[in-house]
Image 1 (cartoon, rainbow, N blue to C red):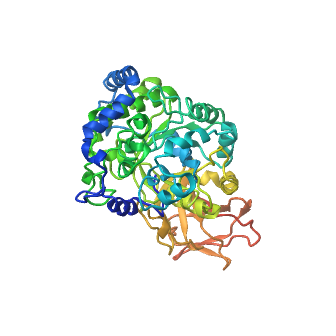
Image 2: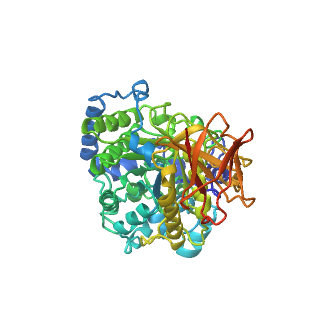
Image 3: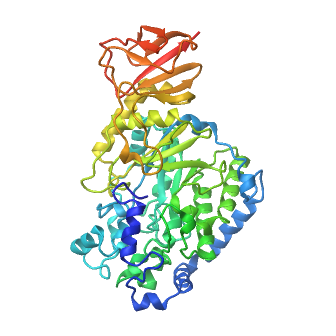
Amino acid sequence: MSNTQWNRRQWLAGAASIGLAVGSPGVASAATTEKTPDDLDREWLNATKAYVPERSRRLAQAQAGAGAGPFRPDWESLQGYSVPEWYADARFGIFVHWGIFSIPAFGSEWYSRNMYVQGSAEYEHHIKTYGPQTRFGYKDFIPSFKAEAFDADAWTSLFRDAGARYVVPVAEHHDGFSLYDSHLSDYTAVKMGPKRDLIGEIARSARKNGLHFALSSHRAEHDWFFDGGRRFPSDVSDPANAGLYGPAQKRLTSGPDEALFGDYTHVSQAWLDDWLARQIELVDRYSPDLVYFDWWIGQPSFRNTLPTFLAWYYNRAAKAGGSAIVNYKLGEFADGSAVLDIERGQAPGIRKDVWQTCTSISDKSWGYIENDTYKSPEQLIHLLADVVSKNGNLLLNVGPRADGHIPDAARDTFLKMGAWLKVNGEAIYGSRPWVVFGEGPTETASGTFAESKAKPYTAQDFRFTVNKGALYAIQMAWPDSGSATIASIRPDYPVRAVKLLGSGADVPFRQTGDGLVLTPPADSPRQLAYVYRIESH
């Protein structure tokens, strides 16, 4: 995942400076220019040759399952997918970015890449703090990742108290280090570092605490993620390290980074097969109710491999009577075949299909970094209300410290959100959109990476949901004037009663040509947002 200060457009500018964009000659070492993409794949395959039998077994499992169920491995069939009700009802989940990148805790969770991008702040910081990348590479952080304070029950209890209904830990980030018990890699948290199955522990604890367990795989980007390390002397170019760094293919793009149709990075069939085998292993081992894929899964080379995974996963759930949800971004899947996720952004209006937005509780990074800043509970409850009013779910990320401790600022915010949801949750959980999502003067900045354009809401801003026959109006700020008018509720929607949740008080109201006029009690407890339950005749 990128962040608001180092997003993918900014990365392109940095990439161009080291010769990664199409048409730029770069400053490549002789070793790089002598090796073809096939050479780099062979090095990676040689480093992982011990796993050929298991990879083959998982691929056979994928092919058999993809052809044995209601779904076929083609996009037309996959468009018949429907979202499980639990997910449409849940509305709020917790994302977790944790891993080796939490050790340096500098820049962002892309430290693993950027420490090899000459001229970047991470590159300079790394040399100054740890020494040159020939002497201390990313792999050398692994022994320090011990997860000594990690307690899965403490995590999932906190997430439950925050009001979340599902949890999505990142099983493998772009850096290629698996936090789970993979039988397809040497570089796992079971074999190195903590020597624990971190994902397995979270899965068991989440289910014990009544949360739906999901997971995230960012493996696709690993095909090229460490390519900067081939531009100067570093441990990335040592074939002995290819099991971690992968083929580190040269990233080739033309046009905006989000427009993956302009991505010409070499992706071999061997890489696609390995990617598919790993996804099958993850699901088969942990049975997640949801799998989240990051953006690069939409690179054109993956288009013929993805349907096999989707059909296998959906058929598996259909056979077992379980849940199967897949999140994707930026139009990378055929409409209706999975659930759209809008990263750090919102939809402009009500979407027919359930969708999701993901953002981080912190501002600068998805993973833990020193001196990050955090969004306020009020800001996040307002985001939740807006998203739910448009038929969406909020997936809110936290980056634990390397030792497994969740930062106090994040913990406090989670608990304040949970307290609000305990009082007002009937407007969120199990709710559906009304005829309009809301009203008010504050315009919502929609689209991917648009959250930095968001403006504070006012007392004139409302968001609407419906649940079990009641209409809920969520007011984003207290009306200091003593009254509020909801213009969308006209006299042709006859109101019988209004109650302000959290106060226990009936709210005096009258209906006029201007809308529903409310006079909430002046002594009502102050909240992060104010929810009126409106009952009609």
